[in-house]
Image (cartoon, rainbow, N blue to C red; front, top):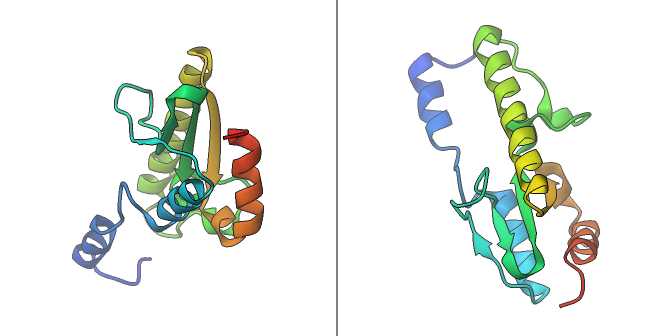
Length: 136
């Protein structure tokens, strides 16, 4: 059972950002500080990747652990209420992500997914991003 009313839950959920979320902004600032330049949310690509590096043929998705079902992450736990809504919703998010990744790979793009929980360790994330993006 949810602890808040349906109207209050709707208000809370409407404030969850689609673009420019805290984890995405952390990744964007890190990538920029490393000297890489990128495009944002390119509509011509499957899934509108969060960061696009056209010249490198690389894209980065920054996924929220809950919304995109990060395997093995405590932040990805299933809600206890309204399972009939949440299970199909979160499953379809995961399936859509897999489809978009497959389409990008088939089109010759390299794909990196950065999970929300990974933004807590900036040094590890910085190294991972540098390794993925290669020399400037």
